[in-house]
Image (cartoon, rainbow, N blue to C red; front, side, top):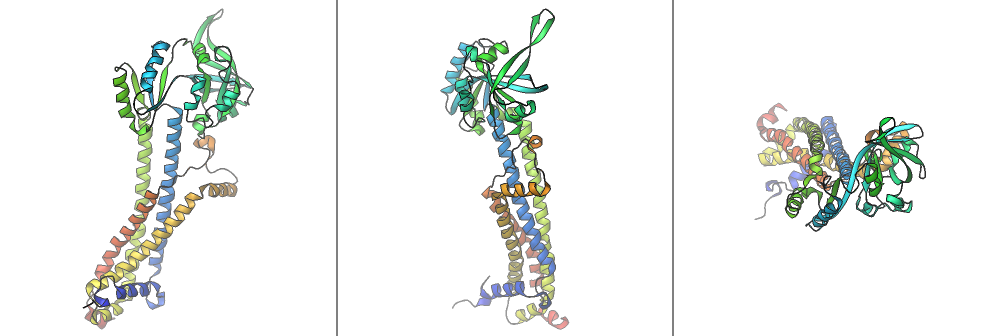
Length: 426
C-alpha cells in the first residue's frame, strides 16, 4: 500500500503547508517582519563573506606574485666563490629535478639622484640574457634590450627603472640618473662613495607598486665594476616548478652540490609576512562567520512568531492526523527556506560583485572624486579579487546548515504543543 501524503516525510502535504505559511500575509499569521529581517541579514552576511574573502584572496595572490616575481624561489649564496665555480654549480643545480632556471645576480641598496631629487632604491644586476627568467618583467625585458640594455663595453651604461621610482625622480627613457653606492674609494679628499651616471633605457611596470617603487635593473658586468665585485656573483636565483615545494627541491640541490651552499627559500625569508596574511585571513573569516551566525539566529525568532500565529492551525492538523514529526518538518522547512533563499541571493550578488569589481571600483572612484585604493599607498594598481568557487559554495553551505540548525529549536517547540490545550486557549 502506498503511503499517504501526511505519512511521507517532507511529502507533498508538508511542503504545501510550509509554502502556504511562507506566502501568507502578516495579517493572516504569515512570516513576521523579524523573519524578513533574518532573510536580509543572511543575504548581506553571505555576500559580505564572499566579497571579503575574494578581495583578501586577491590581495594575497597579488602580494605573493610580487614576492615570487621580485625574489628567487630559492637563493644560493655564492659571494665567496669565484665566478667560474659559481657557473659550474649553477649548471649542476639547473639539472636538478623540478628546477626551471638558475641565474646569477647581485642585489645592493643604492641612492638614486636625478632632477634635484634623491631617493633610495635596490639595484638588481642580472646578465641581459637572463631577463626572460624574471616573472615580474611582463615582456621578458624585450623593451630594455631594444633600448640598449647590456650593450657596450662592460655591459654599457643603460639601466631599467621601475615606474613609480622613475616618476618620483622625474625620469623618462633617455634621461640620466646618478647611482651612488655604499662602497667607498680613496681620493685626494679622503673616502668618498662610488657613484656613476646611467641612462634610463626602459621604465618597467610589474603591477606591484612595491616593486616598481624600488627596483633598478643593471647589466651584470657593469654592476660587478660598480660594486667592486669583479669576477664574483652574490647569489644564484633558482626558480622551481612549484614554489610551494621549495623544501623538497632544496634538499635535492643540497645533495647535488655536496651541501656546499647556503640555501634559503622565499617562505623562510617571508615567514612573518606570510604568517600575518594567514592570521588576518582566518580572523576576517571568523568575524564574518560570527556575523552570519547572528543573522541566522533571527530565524529562531521569526519561526517562533510564526508558530505562535499558527498554533490553532497546528492543533487542528494534529487532530486530523498530522504527526509531531510532520509539524517539526513543516516549520523546519520554513526556517531552512528563509535561510537558503538569503544564502542563494547573497551568493549571486557576491559573485556578480567580484566579477565586476573593476567597473564597481571605477564607479566608486568617480563618486568620491578620488581613488579608493591609491597605488602609492597600498602598493597595488587596482583592487584585486580572486573568485574561489570552493569558498562561494562552502559559504552557502554554511548558511544553509546554520539555518537548518537554528530552525530546529522552534520546530521542536511547535511539534511538542498539546493540540487539546491549543484549541482550548486559542
